[in-house]
Length: 504
Ligand SMILES: NC(=O)c1ccc[n+]([C@@H]2O[C@H](COP(=O)([O-])OP(=O)(O)OC[C@H]3O[C@@H](n4cnc5c(N)ncnc54)[C@H](O)[C@@H]3O)[C@@H](O)[C@H]2O)c1
Image 1 (tube, rainbow, N blue to C red):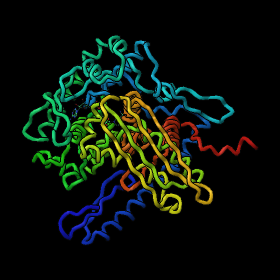
Image 2: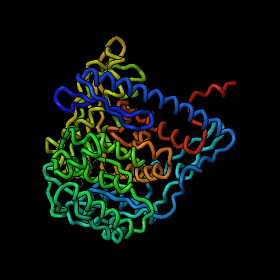
Image 3: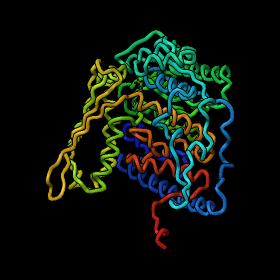
Image 4: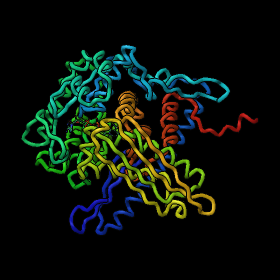
């Protein structure tokens, strides 16, 4: 719901087929009620359709297990375009190159190391995911990127200081051949850094056109058959949706007028979607979470997903909180603090960028614990997240959690987690998986036409969902959703864990 003009309120919803509707009301309450009714109706329709599909795929599974005819093969090269060639991006590309050369293993990557159980527990069938669904191979990946600094990927990786020099020198040729294209940048959105490698243009629409030209040029020069864009650039200052974000038309008008509410990340996402290229958002920026981008993705049938890679502290949160809820243990407080000293930490030292990150990190607990269903357990939680820039640690973050829980008869207990993690080492396999799965989605009409790829929630701190639908944050529900989506695509039986048949 949004206010169009004083006294005019617009209900704004998507139907079960992903089409957007708007209706005008004179009060906010009427508009909100209408929107809730229509959204619930759409979810109901979608749910019963999903159920029907699930039933069909189970029946189908009994006769054959090769429903791949609807997934186009992963033929040719896959071009990966990365806004932001910093610590995460360089650790990802250097890692892929090291794995290709047999120098290291792709640890942490579900697409490379994960397996998927098929059929009953007694059948012993658990192929690797990459053998079960047709994914692009690591040798098929080609890369480009944009950055405000002129360093090539080798220099940027040395500067990030995540990987050892020996390893980087082994992949130097590939890394130093990747030079950053000029970025679309607005210092007001990332106050702590500034750089020379920036595009100039009449307005934001003109800058988007320049990015589109970069994309077309890369498609040609790399010989890539398919492309993916994944945002690995800095966290932008916190903004809320405005009227300019409400439709593709208003977005384009605002870009032409150089409206400041259009963040650089939105210019990249717009350019990517206009070129028919799926977009993943690794930062907590608003970027894709506006009606205009969802409209663009739905209309053009382009997969999108976000936001904010789920790597360290939130990963732990989405593992521990479901355990408390499962055992009906109460929670009175969760204090999370971090020290980190990489450029991301420096950017997050700015209150505007920190607020964007904070919002993204805070959401998970509320959705997992559902205080409205369990008010006596989770109705009064003090949840705090702090990030402190501390240069000596570089990319090696330390995240502390103090968790105050209570059990039987209200007796209090405490849990302390001290995670000495490596930010980019945790993020790189997520980037790889997202690239390969988004490409799978782009080759699969059934997924492509959804726009938002909720089945990839597993990888994000603030997963995107259909408008009005609350996100699943529990890591294991997210994993089940991801694997069942793959089973469904291949016409394999979904795994419900019911298991009564073992006792027949
Ligand atoms: N590493 C993690 O665990 C993790 C987890 C979740 C999210 N993230 C997010 O991923 C992003 C990348 O993290 P990082 O550690 O690599 O940061 P980084 O600072 O090392 O790299 C970001 C790069 O983006 C560039 N940049 C900034 N604005 C740009 C623009 N408009 N266009 C092109 N380039 C631009 C910067 O110059 C920098 O080189 C950050 O937004 C971070 O919050 C990281």
